[in-house]
Length: 116
Image (cartoon, rainbow, N blue to C red; front, top):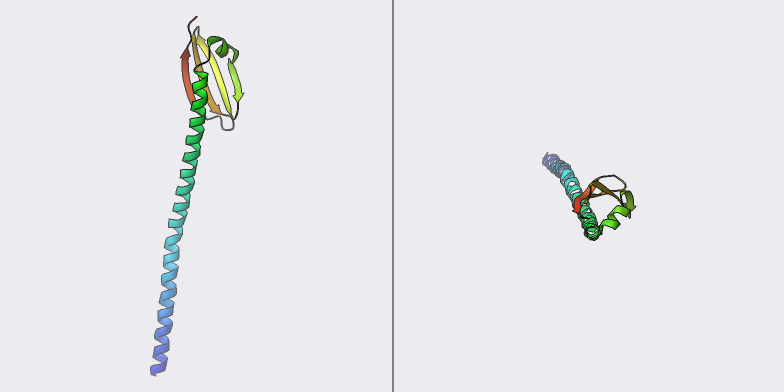
């Protein structure tokens, strides 16, 4: 009789260990997926920041353009992987916007004053 009860206890201990591993695995899956999603979000934020820095550097060059340069660029123009739009709402005032060419999401917009 003692032999049978020892085997039963060993089997119960093994079953408890298997259940504990299953519970730990079930708890770990959401944690791992959350960590993976966090890494993807960080990567997207870094890419977005890199894109905005490049767009800002381009805008710094556009801010130095003369009135004649701005007039030559009126309307929509593709600039690399961006679409730049230059409008002249009134004499001497220009609005310049830069959007992503794929998503058309607005990245930057500014107004420039160039008197006669």
